[in-house]
Length: 405
Image (tube, rainbow, N blue to C red):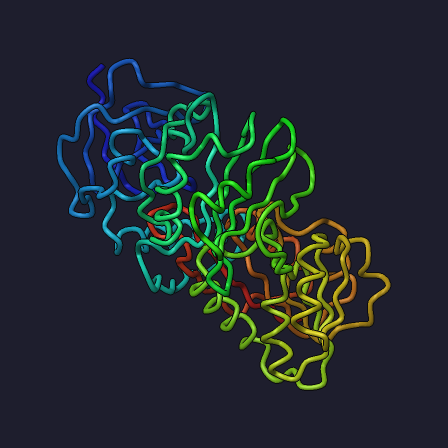
């Protein structure tokens, strides 16, 4: 097989995109825009409308190509990053194109690729890392062998503090629960460290021994049974919901929310819904601007903690689609749904009774575009901005601002 492929862009998920001689689109991991590559022998998988392959050799290297600094990226094919081989400016261009393509192709919007806000830090920004456990290995998955786990030595996009904790933990894995399936390390806002051990076996009984061995007073240990709720088994009960959703890039998450809330304009004394509001970070910004806020999220622990932070906000622990009929009509709505996007009933409520302003914060350009296409019945998109919360990966956060048409 002597296929030469010119890489013209980056697809959702981070693969390079080119075309085969027969015109079929081919997706190639670890290829950079501008590369000319020879496909690896026997790697080509042809499907009806597309193909997949691996790089065999780089015949001509793009100017956008750089040497990845992480040994795991090269030697273990780590799947947590997809773009370490692309210079940062190239990553930003690729993410703008991913969002713009989704909005045009799926959302049917006539618009250019949006502006993107570059990250505050390109490395060591993650305040959380979740590792798989399989057999004797605790680490991450290769992109080309998702059922395999390689032992993690260091993750270059994760905070130094968490990696220092991981180096100490690696020699004491025997103190973690038996039949461990997942291990998550997380920093909270007061600088404490959380270890969340998920296992299919008995409860974690050695957590206190682990804290003593590590000599860390600020360490809090959680045990989470598979498909069960996590609970603190050692360390102080601070109330912080370590298993609740929170952006892993706190600084960039704050910039994203600030811009989103600013787009609502003057909301003093206005009722604003904060749907999928999590631990209340967006609600806090809305309160600062004088809004009367109703925040809804399905995670009871997140809502309980948020109530202690923001007594002025009405927090509701429920699915948004279940409670909207009972809520007072809002002037504006902020939605920050999971990557699956808005529940159809939420879309129906927003289109059936349009609000003056709607801000949509999204972690998935495809479902954002789908929902914007559904909402364009009686809204118009007036602004879109992307934010690079996840450097070295193909993920991108997007904020769309809508007004009632």
